[in-house]
Length: 298
Image (cartoon, rainbow, N blue to C red; front, side):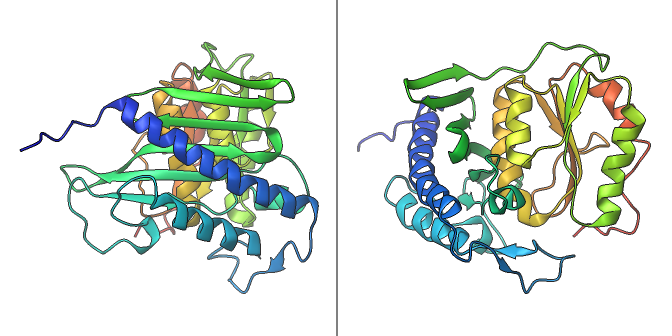
């Protein structure tokens, strides 16, 4: 009987590269829609407390394209959003995100991404992302990472493609650092972010607010930012967080909830990512504004 070859980190990286190619193809269509808008964004029928305030036909096209093409490149057990209630160790599910940074997209800014993450259930029956791809079509940037294979940034320019290993900064103190933060359209959630930014004032050299979350995570991974924090990333943000998380992990950065606990992949999270050198100092500020007791974890 023929032996089954054990999967290697390079196998996972090759799969990530194939998925990156699919996201680039989908991204060209999304970019065309952004530059040639016809009813680009329609008001959402969702309550703002339970979902984004816009819905895009572009999102539907991306999901249909990626779902149909993924089946051609690798075996997997389904998609994260339609997975069964119980999963077995070893099962894998793709999570294809909607456009991350929808406000930026609608306002014709360049900072928005398409994301894909592959989750695998471990021996403890807990899911963990093992591949992450973040593609920013308008910037010509793609970040990808696979478990055990490191993280790569691909920059496409008019003169060719440049590939770099992704590594975080060596900044060792909040003093002189460059941070990034995210905030929600829900006032109480935004206030938490603004309170932290205000408390930090005077220490970092700069605190940026651009987004989206997936790109901010990747920019921590590649040293553009020394850290990033956001007070409430919702269940609909999981694809973006997961994709960026694998990039941070494989770049040897750190990522957790504000209290230091691990990210929960089935419900809302506050998130902080760093180069690993300033997290203890930064967490002192985050812990002044703890997770609200009124939020019940599912």
